Amino acid sequence: MGINDKPYSEKRDFIRMKIGAPLNAKIAAESEVIEGRCLDLSGGGLQVEAQQALAIGTQVEVEVSSDHGHSPTLKANAKVVRAAQSDSGSHLLGLEIVSILP
Image (cartoon, rainbow, N blue to C red; front, side, top):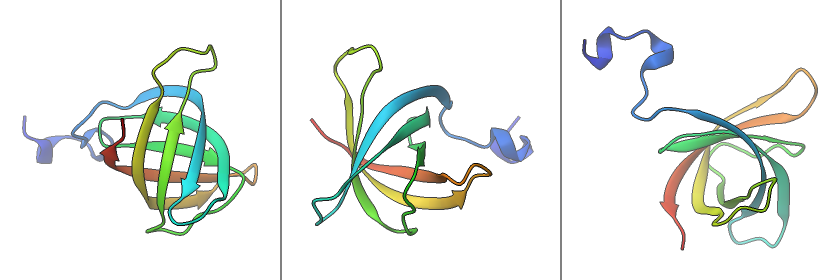
């Protein structure tokens, strides 16, 4: 079965893992840091819940850490590709990973 034969929800290049981990995002060229939670993660991106909205196309540097202090953390440059408001009033952001940072 090819990718075009799969239902829409399965047309991904990478498996999405639910993680619910703390996340900090720094908007490129600004000093402001946004705190949130990484709801899920895949090889190409992540879904984030935050209290602050970000516009589609915004470049951010993200750091996803562990609730349990495990390391290493994930650090990456990412771009907002999807933005929506949840029923609870928080903002759900789809971020595309542009590059992994050391």
